[in-house]
Length: 156
Length: 156
DNA sequence: GCTTTAATGCTACAATGTTGCATCAACGCC
DNA sequence: GGCGTTGATGCAACATTGTAGCATTAAAGC
Ligand SMILES: [Mn+2]
Ligand SMILES: [Mn+2]
Ligand SMILES: [Zn+2]
Ligand SMILES: [Zn+2]
Image 1 (tube, each protein chain N blue to C red):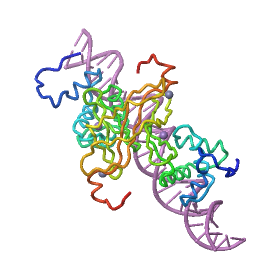
Image 2: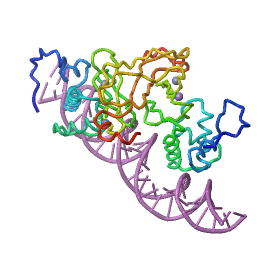
Image 3: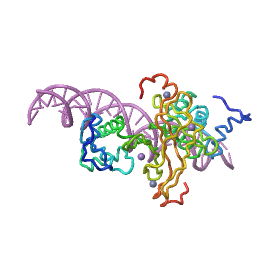
């Protein structure tokens, strides 16, 4: 595993995993660093399982429970956010700057999840009196380009 | 396809559970009838557990698996729809006329789910080329009136 | 280095949902 | 109304996802 030297003048990777953890007063551990890096690398919100696989690939031994707790902590700290997705398993992605909540697309055939950065999840709907809105989740379901193409004849 | 018998001048309870099942070519069983009636009675989308409790209350013995399968069948037939809700458990509600998909509110404190009939879940967003939208789910999270009132000081 | 305690690893458990298969009962037919 | 067919059920066993308790390890500050 490579040490990230901090010649970080790149505007694209604004904070190193270590800085992010330290900034929230947490201890810098292999697991947390690797989880954040997996989320930074991933092109879509990752499931617990996918993150676990990434850690294995990086040669980082870990316990299931530890991973759950690392993810919980990241969410508590506002570093990552949880996405419901439509199956039973949560997906996780880094909280990119601010509270920019966007919609997600869930392919019902291959299970792939895609960020729709352009589609805000924010609705400002009429809630009954006394109700307080904390956040909104918008998930679109359907078939992704690959899946739609490969068996379009099913009609369903 | 048979026409509804015409003693039905009530516009409010359009179909009996039995008719609904028969119209979809299914066998009319105690469990299915009771599940549909529970969904018709319920004021919000019901979890598997809540439906099971309703069956027990109605004195209808049943197996966990049977209930799962009854619900699966209702969803397959388009009689009911599944809602993700944000916990691990599905919620179910009858598919009221047409494809009228509305948003739902999930209270993060008491777990209550509320239908927001007025808020359409439909977004017509820009999907990448080749993607096919089947349906969309919009879930708003926060505190319901009761929960918001009773401990507003937490701030979280 | 030494101490403190946050974080981990392990075990055991809970909640939700699924699969296979033998049995039962709904429904069509007579 | 009885009968046979087969869809629906009940039961046992299992899978997946996530939690709780507690002893041990190791990160951070001195
Ligand atoms: Mn996203
Ligand atoms: Mn609803
Ligand atoms: Zn797909
Ligand atoms: Zn509430």
